[in-house]
Amino acid sequence: MPLISSRQNPVVRAFRTLARDADPDGSRLLLDGAHLIRDACDAGVELEMVAVSAGRGSGTEEAELARSLQTRGTQVIAATAQAFGAMTPVRAPSGIVAIARRTPTGLETICAHPHAFVIVAVDVQDPGNVGALIRSAEAAGATGVVVCGASANPFSWKAVRGSMGSILRLPVAARSDVATALRGFRQAGGHVVAAVARGGQTPDEIDWRGRVAIVVGGEGPGLAEDALAQADALVTIPMAPPVESLNVAMAAAVLVYAARRQRQAP
Image (cartoon, rainbow, N blue to C red):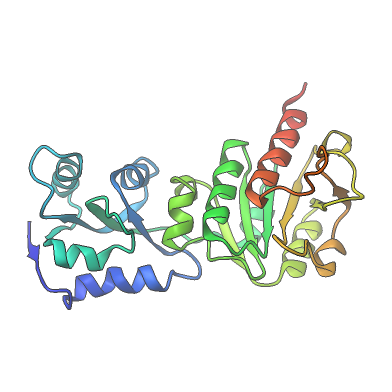
């Protein structure tokens, strides 16, 4: 396979650019590590290019994966330590990175799902939390995730890594205006449940059946009025004092599993 040694090589620049500026619609994703790359292959996601560190000798997981992908027709290059270090934003590089091509998912597609069970993340600024939320959504059987407001880009390498591959399989859309997103879901016949710190019903009191969107976010101040105005119901997770709040990804996990339990009940 070709060997790249210069940090100024166009291939190196392509990886660096995607690491710095993630695609707004997730058409291209930066994947770091054999686990994510294997997940992409299993999900049928096209790999535009794969780069392996030249220091990963024959017999290592990364080298064997690179050779296998090359045999299947994927473009694979090797990079010296200096060049490879410029291609990955991870402090401790795994030894193999890839650029994946993903088919973007629109809000309309997510809303139109006949059994829509959607998580709407609002103003979740930490990309790791966005990724973990997407992972919880897939684990609970959600049909999609919509990321709104001042949230971190769900297609950034940190969010992709935090999702542990879930974003490669679960429909995810990014929209700036939460009110428009929720209005669209309601117009499609959906029911919106917004999570609030206090004053809402408990998760077991909510009717989670049918087409439902769970709105979480506002890691500091909570959901804004424009989001709450679109809610059909409010839900509050009961907590023993003195705890008053949970990490947004953890709160989302509690709610999606409460909903899943009811939705799967006979």
